Image (cartoon, rainbow, N blue to C red; front, side, top):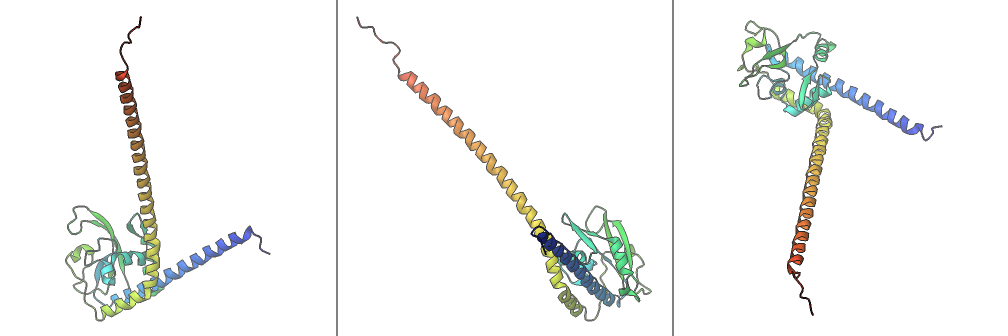
Length: 239
């Protein structure tokens, strides 16, 4: 028989197990969807894509996936291929390498590298990861540096339709992950706002108390002076 003390613990244990199972299911589903899309993209000529640079670059993998920056981040986090910390996306290199060497890609080869260089208008060297997708032709760049920053990904038939199917297969998981990621951030922002508001209110209260005390002192001094001024300086002695 379940006791009152053990029942909440068992419920918590069940909830934790359910959460882990759901996370693993989401991870597997996302990785399978990404794998299918990468296999499709591999039917085009070789091209290097960045994994975690500015989304404005045409060679960012998110653009090839046809995804927004937030959806792309949520997708990689759900697939356990990246982590999201302090507003930044950090690629899990080991997880990516295991994923690319997995059974999904028995007939397809990829290359992944870590780069440190300047991109676009930035004057600072950035650290980021790149991945090569597609078959190597005579004119295919062997390195990301040889590709050029103005290069455009090769065209593919039915790319838009494939992207749409990919979005539909992952939209529920992406939405759920976005809520988890950005809800925490919003809670932190709300907490910071409340703390700041409390500090401001406290400062205003202290200031008002000080002003009231000063005003009372001034009134008291003025009143005392008024009384002292109205009191006769000398009283005649009646004989």
